[in-house]
Amino acid sequence: MNTSDTKTLREYDRAHVWHPFTQMKEWEESDPVVIVRGEGTWIVDSEGNRYLDGVAAIWTNVHGHCKREINEAIKAQVDTLEHSTLLGLANDKAVLLARRLVEIAPPGLCKVFYSDNGSTAVEISVKMAFQYWQHQGKPEKTKFISFKNAYHGDTIGAVSVGGIDLYHAVFRPLLFPTIQAPAPYCYRCEFGERDRANCGMRCLKELERLMEIHAHEVAGLVIEPLVQGAGGMIVQPDGFVRRVRELCDRYDILMIADEVAVGFGRTGAMFACEREGITPDIMALSKGITAGYLPLAATMTTQKIYDAFIGEYREMKTFFHGHTFTGNPIACAAALASLDLFENERLLDSLTNKIGYLAERLQALNEVRHVGEVRQCGMIAGIELVKDAETREPFPWEERVGIQVCLEARNRGIFLRPLGNIIVVFPPLSISLDELAFLMDGIEASIRAITELRT
Ligand SMILES: *Cc1c(COP(=O)(O)O)cnc(C)c1O
Image (cartoon, rainbow, N blue to C red; front, side, top):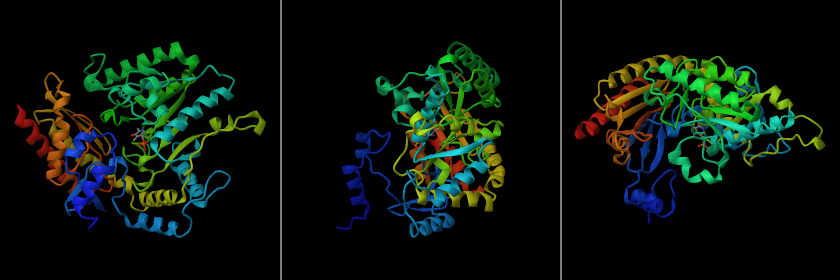
């Protein structure tokens, strides 16, 4: 039996692989696409079909698939040291990467705690903030402020600070309660504001009210700065994150910025917080850190927070947390090679044209009948499809118009993964202008093909 033929691969997949966020009944009835190769912006399936990777290997890929420089760095590291541990030892790549991260992070973030995925980076942030106050003689500060519609990962702590009921409701009994603040979602503003700035102001006002009541018992606030990702690529008004920083300062609350999705150039700056000119107390990084190659995460923090954990061993101030593959040298080597490419290829500078072009193409989509709102922040876009653009009435969720548009795009050689009826544009940052044109042509044609059928 040829175990690499498509039929066999599909059969084994359906027999044994339980896919994430997937209703497996439907999956088993489908013919899954089996990806076997990557080339730059493209992924190739077992039958040789090529797809432009419109979601950058689920928001991770930066320089394209199988980028020579990263491949070589990984190969060299494999032949040198594959893994040891940060429990009781250092390793050269983890040390050098920590140094590089501190150099590029918002000023003041000078300590790096490694883990291996976005959820753990957030989990660590939450535990760090919690324990900080225990050591500061304010043990009553144990709660967290989270935002409606937030997504911070799928482990129990990360789900606790999340706010997407569809994913999180079933686990409610397992979660710790949080104080939930409204997040700006100007298109569907819960205060009924139609103006972006007003929607943001109303949210901030409510946030401040919650802080006034609860600050004495709050350890930290968790936010996805600039863009709520899995919530629907919802872009915050300018200045929102800066105001949140000010409020956290005023009410003595640690600000945790979850840059797992927006970090590493995605918004046009290396980090989203940079665009708002702020430094969070704790910053969680993962997805783009190894340019989409290997699982790695970092939780960065300040000297002030770090110092609160310093003491004699018997004082029990140690941060008792750690993962087996913490600081894995192969993953760190990939991350270092990626940061070299950011510099050598002047990647951030090269984004200006692409971001401008993307803006033009998104603008044009406003003319399409069932496009409700288009949102963009740097190289991220969300295209919200609605039944009626006048009234903003959504498509019934059971119709799954978003999925259908993405399946249509697949026929045109584009892989997309929607968030409900929001089409996500999140290609590798290295995408060329021609490829970006192909992507946006395909998206526009697919939206028209699916939605204009049903009028
Ligand atoms: C993806 C994501 C996470 C979770 O990361 P995993 O690596 O999937 O655990 C956390 N926060 C944000 C903002 C994300 O987009």
